[in-house]
Length: 619
Ligand SMILES: Nc1nc2c(c(=O)[nH]1)N[C@H]1C(S)=C(S)[C@@H](COP(=O)(O)OP(=O)(O)OC[C@H]3O[C@@H](n4cnc5c(N)ncnc54)[C@H](O)[C@@H]3O)O[C@H]1N2
Ligand code: MOO
Image (cartoon, rainbow, N blue to C red; front, side, top):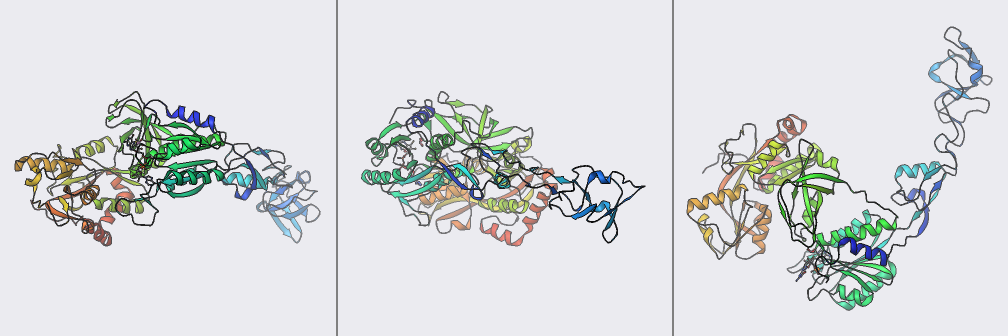
C-alpha cells in the first residue's frame, strides 16, 4: 500500500478516469419509460400541440368582425348555423370562425337564437395551433435528466421514443468468509452482509443498473474467477473488503495479477486502503470492508465516474456554512471526512456536531446530516471554527425538525417517534449533558430539553440547579443503576464496587447526568474513579457492550428488554421532564405532546421501556 499522503483522492480519481474512462452508449426507449434517464441528443417536437386551433372555453364560435356592433344598449341577435355554433372546451374551431364567446355572456333567446351584449375580438378564447408545443421546437437538450413533466412535454410534441444514454452496469462483489446474507441470524464471528445493499442502492440512486455478484470467500482464485465473470457483463466492478493488510486481504494482489493496479491507498480517512485498477479496459474499485469506508470510496470514485459517463462537469451537492460545536482532532497526512449532525440556530446559523469517527458505525451514516472535510495538513480544529457542511438531507427538512437535547432513556425514542408521527414533523434526539442542553435551549438550537430531576424541581446533576422548571412537562420516572452480566457473576453490590480493577466499567460521557451522579456518589463513598473504563453515549449501547464483553458493568437505566441478556441493579430514581420552548408548547405540536402523555396504550409501552408514570421519588 502506498504511504500516507502518496496519492490524494483527486490524484487517484484522475488516474482512474484516464485509464478507464466511461464509455456510455445511446439507446432509444419509449418516452413513457424514460423517467430519470438522461437525454443523449436534443429532441425536437414532431407535432404541434394542439394540432388544430381549439376552443379554450365552453361557449359559441363566432366571426369576430360580425360581432362588433354588439353592446349592452344594442344587444345583437345571432342565428345558429349562420352566425354562431355551440362549442365546448377543446373542440376544433370551425374554419369560418375566429373567436369564442363564453356561455355565461350569451343570452339564449329561443330555439337556434342567442343575443350577445359585447363584441368578440379576433382569436378571443382560441388556443392557437402549437400554443403548447410547436413542431420543430427543441423540447429537451442533451444531458437533461427526464422528469415526469418532461415526459409529458415529449408526448405532447409527438415524441414517442427518446434517445437516452445507456445506464452503467455495475456489479458489486462482497468478499469475506464471515459474511452471511440478510435474513439469517449471524452466529458469533459472523457479520450480516449489508454493504452490497448500501453500495448497490446508492448506485441506483445515481442512475446505475446494479448486479449483485454474491458473497465470495477470502480466496484469491475464487475472487479472480468471480471478477472475470463480472467484468464480462459490467461497465464497472466493485469488490468490497479484503483491501487492507490482513492475512486474508487478497483483493489488491488479485487486481495486480489481473490488470493494472493504479492505486492502493489514498491519503483520506475513512477509506484509506481503497484499491483502484483497470482490468480488461474496465475500472475495478476495491473498496475497504468497513461500511463508512466503502461508502466514501463510492462517493470519491464511483460517483464522479458516473457523472463523467453523463458528461456532467459539476456536482450539484448542497453545502451550508456552520460553526463547529466542539474541537476535532485528527492525524496529519490524510484528509479526514467527518459525519456531523446539524442543529439550527435562531439566527439562521448552524452548529455542526461531529459524530463518531468509527468507520464501522453504519448507524452514524444514517444519523448524519452532512459531512465536513478536515484537510490533510490540519490536525486540530477548535470549537467555533467556520466549516462547510456537505448535506445528506434537504435543508428544509433540517430547518423543520424538532430537536430534543439532553438526557437519555430508551423510552424517549418511543415517545418522540409517536410525537413525530402525530405532529407530522421530524423529531430528532441529541443526547448530551444537562448543562450543554440548557445552553443550547437558551441559544435556540434545540426546541426541547430532557431534564433529569430528583423529583423536587431542582437539577442535582447540573451547575444551574435553580433553572425554572415550573413549565416542564413530567414525562415519567426511570431507575438508574448498574447493568451487569446475567446472574451478576462479579457480585457487584453498589457504588463501593467502583474501585475494582478486575472489571471494565462502561460509563456515560463526561458531563452527562449519570456520569456526574456517579462521580459525586464515588466521592461520597470514598472510592476513586476506576482505571479500566470506556464511555458509551447511550444506555442501550452500554447494555449491548456488557452483554458482549465478559467482566464488564455499565451505568444505565432499568429496561425490561434487557431481561434475556443482562441483569440490572437499581441504585437511584430520576424524573424525566421535558422543557419545551413556550412558543412550540402553544402550537398544535404542544397539544399533541400533552395528549400523548395521557395516552394509556402508549404509557404501557413506555413503562415496558423503563419510563414509569411520575410517582413520588424516594432517596
Ligand atoms: N494492520 C492494519 N490493519 C488494518 C489497517 C491497516 O492499515 N493496518 N487498515 C484498517 C482500515 S483503515 C480499514 S478501512 C480496514 C479495511 O479492511 P478490509 O478492506 O480488508 O476489510 P475487512 O477487514 O475484510 O472488513 C472490515 C470490516 O467490515 C466488515 N465487512 C466487510 N464486508 C462487509 C459487507 N459486505 N457487509 C457488511 N460488513 C462487511 C467485515 O466483517 C469487517 O468487520 O482495515 C483496517 N485494518
Ligand atoms: O480507512 Mo479506514 O477506512 O480509516 O477505517
